[in-house]
Length: 187
Image (cartoon, rainbow, N blue to C red; front, top):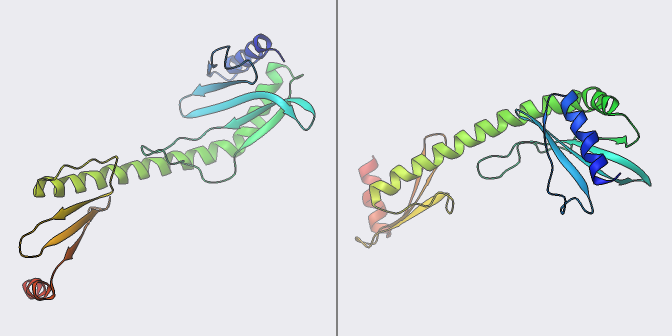
């Protein structure tokens, strides 16, 4: 299937499914033809190629990622193959009948997982920042999940980790004598 024919057919599929379409530039499609159909959180990737000796369209459901780039879906990819000979109406029908029943529930799970993970990361970074501000330390959230506080005050060194559950882990490196003093203060 040539690039223009692919674009026309997939554009019709997108129109039937009420999705927008996004293609790479023609130079990128010289060797491999593909595009994305989008509607809200639903993202379908369609590519054209030879599969087991036949010209087919490979259609797969895409999943969101977290603010740190982690995938929201950890299972097998969800995809179908259809022959390039099918009409846009039949391709759209295959997407609705064969891809969506498995993809949509997994997409919903992935969206919720990404939402919770993003909330956890934002809370964790806010908690670490509070501690960094208290100690006057610059915190780079994209670099470190924790901060290190080294004070040369009577042999005190520490590391602070914060979680997204609003807790802070504070490790102290102390001489045995200082450790006893701290434990006595905590009694």
